[in-house]
Image (cartoon, rainbow, N blue to C red):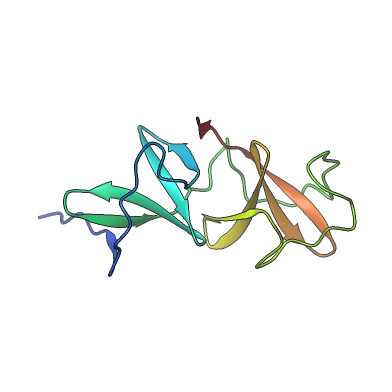
Length: 118
């Protein structure tokens, strides 16, 4: 017998939805909300913790740097850097415009596009 396991975000008093103030992103066949470095998915009476899968669309590989207009080349991603943290595979990426940046050995790797829901 198979049981589907999901991580539940505890003690969540904010209601996510259109106009809630958090960035909504398309994740597979549904929408998740970026909230303090977590991807929250409304599920019945609670929110599940989601992570973007490593895939052909969103790979986890070194791109030897990424030339991007989204920030100054000297910008270093991390907590409080001004870009939203996005859980991706076993690491954290940062949403810059419409794609993921992953800080790696002094440069940014491009970890693929993200569809932001307006």
